[in-house]
Length: 366
Image: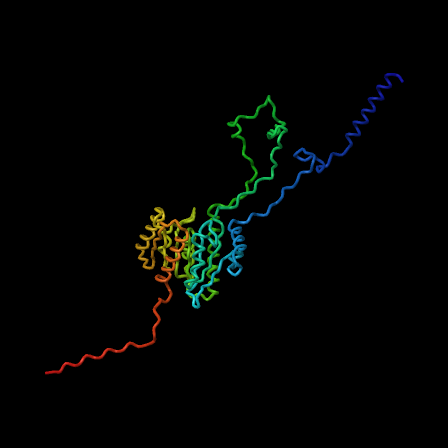
């Protein structure tokens, strides 16, 4: 075959192959290689269930540890929560003391709530201890991303991360000053509730739980209901009584009262203005607590609150048992002496009538 004919045949064959490749349909999008370039299909992100609040985890631990007879599942709106119930160990109970723990405390907090809820029944009081939601803004931390650590090299040292393919010695990355001026991402950030909204929601949740506890106490035919708050729980109790004047509760006891972080007004503007009888127990050795207690006492005098009584607590003992015993005695003393709306305790009468003294003899007239 002549050389010219062979060359023409080769060119014709090449043109036919090019035309056949041009007629092939484009690859489907699903056949494209994944973005990670591993040759494997990209995995969809796993949707994780939201984490429980710390207070819910603590409540579950109490359910495992405490007797079933002490546990009451109350409902605030559509939200169930654990409360611990202890009936009075007397035939005729005085009423119900509703215990409100502070931030980060459980319904069986050992330093204050537990001794009160277990020992006040011995002196004639039912106790109902509540579980409060986590403090506002105290959401559980996000779970770490499931990114495997870099594989170790043969020498035992971690392997260096792969360099970017776009790295070019001729075109180094911009300095930090220029990088900071880059346009921000236009992707919308996940919406976060504002602090005011979180505080409002927290107030509504706690008020609903206190209201549910009062409803349970009334079901027990309680003649007297007392709110007792420890730490920030005292502020929540005072706030509830301020916002709910028709609650029917006539007595408030505050132990080591403090304001939750980020909330107002201060207690000296809240508790002394309540119409309820208020027992304000504070630790006098703590300078900050003593100064705050003085402000509350002065405010109660300005508004002439005659049923506002302060009771100092000594913090001198290193024994936790001695501190708890002192706390129970002081609370019991206030309940026995300053309770509002309850009949005063009097000694039992024998039923005998005292004899009438004889009349003095008449003086004869002259």
